[in-house]
Image (cartoon, rainbow, N blue to C red; front, side, top):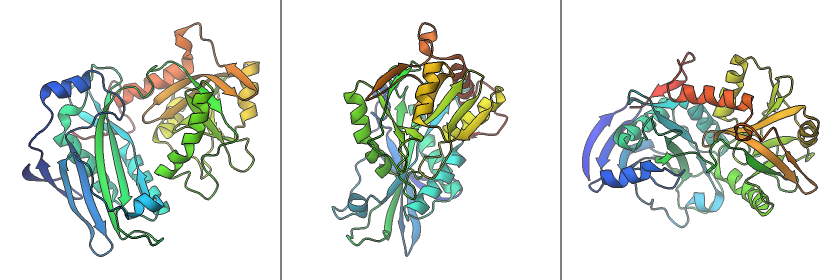
Length: 375
């Protein structure tokens, strides 16, 4: 590796450039058809924390396997968190992140819930900038459709100790992966399995934190969905087993015949999505009344049957806005919306999706200062 030092504001990052980066041809092959989370850039960010010394040794270094003890707390007690956001190439070649301050704030909230140390917001964003600056050639072109560089900040407990307590040694890192659409179908509708037997999160638990345990808890439900011919799973609450919460790793929205849009209210067991918050504001700009409230599984089924619910979509960083065309459960199966036109993507879903993407890719003015330049 060759080394140099760059100062990025909150933390100083030593930059250790790898001696064997991917060739231009190999990189071009990945960028020609990027698959979500399958290929990774040449470098990564790491920093270490101890109770005695705080944060130290922040650096950009070669992407490589981590070395942790078999007794590391993350392996035994799941003390870890992560975030997900994207870097977008604009037409002038610059690279921007969408609302990274919201991701930084959620990272802080997740750290508090999992008893992990705090990463200052400016350091969080500086870490993103440090990695994107070094690996900028991995950001797909603005002409390549819905492509981006997916950024995955994370924090894990690395202390080798089997005592059940907050770890005294922690690693913070950022990795990056060129990404295309999360679903192979792109904006075409996906099918959802509505489960009431498998629960993702409970009141007072970690549902509002972005930690791996929540996703592990969702996988049995996803397997149930796939076994029943669906692509994703919708979960209900843990108490009454009737109130809708999340779809897999996404928030959900319902469009009504009178133009209203409703989404399940945040209740401590639903992840506060950055895309969700943005959709709420953009939908209001487009003239919709947005309700954040309790929505039952029965309201979803009955609304589709009667035509009161005309569109349903899910939102998330990876999936952006994904229309839902079918909901199934053990006793029934319903098609949502008119699938004879526009591939079943309703006009409200389409307009919100376009508004969001146009903003993220710099095609419309950023009047709210939601974009942060990274390179």
